[in-house]
Amino acid sequence: MKRILSGVVVAAVLAAGAAALYLGTGNAAAPESTFVLLDGSRKTTADLKGKVTLVNFWATSCVTCVAEMPKVIATYEKYKGRGYDTLAVAMSYDPPSYVVNYAETRKLPFKVAIDNTGAVAKSWGDVQLTPTTYVVNKRGEIVKSFVGEPDFAELHKLIEKLLAEA
Image 1 (spheres, rainbow, N blue to C red):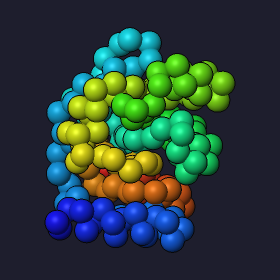
Image 2 (tube, rainbow, N blue to C red; image 1 turned 90 degrees about the vertical axis):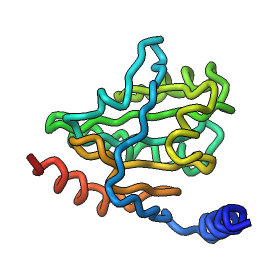
Image 3 (spheres, helix red, strand yellow; image 1 turned 180 degrees about the vertical axis):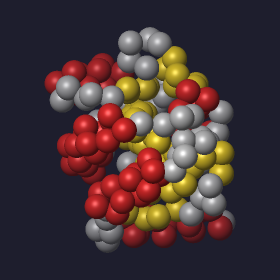
Image 4 (cartoon, rainbow, N blue to C red; image 1 turned 60 degrees about the vertical axis):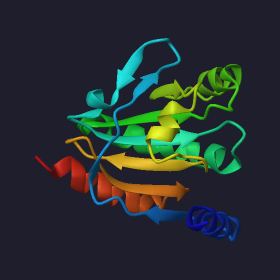
């Protein structure tokens, strides 16, 4: 009942037009996952270590996801040369052909994975609402997560702080 109620609250907040809902994490280690990229290669959670990484769960059918994607791209372009990366994870219900088409036509400059089975979303806190975004530090710990579009000015400050850490 508590989980259902919290889901209703999240949905109500998002429906009210809130930019994003911050989900506290307490610097938990990012869950062990294997991401299957569009080119068929694989990336694991362990591969995220050493870089500050934005892990963005999204869908081509999600209006907010599509609206925020230019800002996700701009953020990647701004910080990629400083040890920053982005991994966009398409939800299991998103047809792979739509994801490939979107990534190609929008020329997404970062890695895109398709979560065909839903296992990745499940391991990352049972992600069901999109966009859901996680900021992972160089040690592979989740330092912040958002449901909905983040405040990108605030996100950039956090990225700069994390990039400055040893």
